[in-house]
Length: 173
Image 1 (tube, helix red, strand yellow):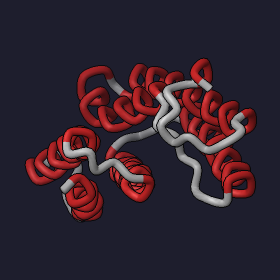
Image 2: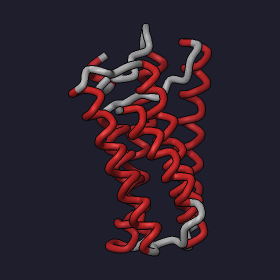
Image 3: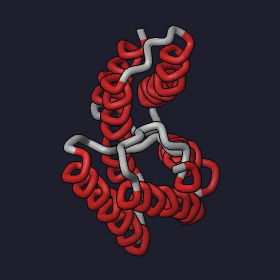
Image 4: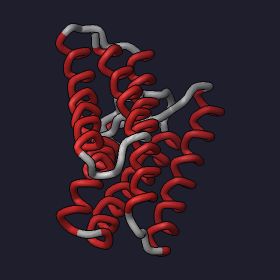
């Protein structure tokens, strides 16, 4: 059941690509994606069906959703150059973590740290925050938290002896 919710998020994310930004269809799909992201982990824990495959599927679904929202916001929002540069730095650090993690652990190594969950929540919230705060304040908030999360994940991947996707943070290694 939990993996089905994750797959629903992936499909809804793809359907978001074909919706008009900030339309009723966009917001409907957006809410389903958010609900399924929260519900899949809860259902997996409650039904004791947590698995490595489910955690990996969840990470992939998160990445798909983030990319789709990113693409939709590029089309709908004028983003200043300094934000693009900051996003590029975060993406480069994330990519570096994934490459190092792949060679170190021989698998995709995205982690479910508290900082990553916070970053994911803010990325998910970007359209709402944009409507409420505007692009500059939203960008600073999201990029600051995402930078901390990316640095933390990089440190965990570098220092970790074994891959623990559910590591809560660098202080809990």
